[in-house]
Image (cartoon, rainbow, N blue to C red; front, side, top):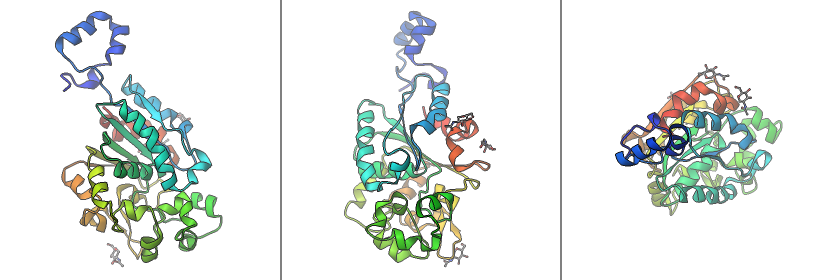
Length: 303
Ligand SMILES: *[C@@H]1O[C@H](CO)[C@@H](O)[C@H](O)[C@H]1NC(C)=O
Ligand SMILES: *[C@@H]1O[C@H](CO)[C@@H](O)[C@H](O)[C@H]1NC(C)=O
Ligand SMILES: *[C@@H]1O[C@H](CO)[C@@H](O)[C@H](O)[C@H]1NC(C)=O
């Protein structure tokens, strides 16, 4: 119900200071909407925290003055290795309290592992008011790669052996294991991974229908990622693509969870509400401080 395109018009609070009360009066007489930009909630990734998102917060406030940006300050740095089902309820508390004060809705911008935390929040929260969910280089369909991150956590373990560590009760207490998706161990993944197969609706569960409805309350899903990421493996996982059992990448539209619309992705796509944004030349830890990426993939959705 905005009479004027928000980007053309700063928030009235700004208007009062910089243009005087006359403009405010004018706005009131014209019946123009008051608050222009929805609050943005940022969820960080593995081994990082609010500090790493200062540039991104600055970008948002620069192009959309007056936006309230919150980087949720929970499970930072090494604590980000805590099991995801333990992290989700704590993130939910912050998420809920911001949503409660934002009757026009919020945007959710989630980086890397944070993208999976956000998917869990969206699926398990009824009546959330998230408008746009931006997933910034997140392993949405899982992770399977010999990367520095893997070495940091499991030392010299090769990707082909990680399933021995991850696919059991103890392994599932490490966040990475919650989205470890070994394409050669499909049965064990489905049986022993207690996180991603549930989000993806790959393992049927009681609340599937409700989760799907909750997820579908978002208006837009924006997927950002690219081939030079260096961490998300395969990088197409940032766009819901993943390896098949011969380690060839199968794109989102041919994934089983897409074809049977297990968690609403196909519905969302057919509604025209899935947006893909691919950028090459961007390394994993620089996605959130690259202004070109921000301009091309995020800015227009954060109104
Ligand atoms: C923020 O951007 C500056 C300049 O592009 C860069 O030097 C710095 O490392 C960035 N900070 C973070 C935390 O990414
Ligand atoms: C994996 O995908 C590739 C490329 O689409 C295909 O040629 C191959 O047969 C698939 N492998 C299996 C085991 O399905
Ligand atoms: C920022 O993104 C652009 C566009 O993809 C890319 O060409 C460039 O290399 C990136 N810059 C950095 C510092 O990552």
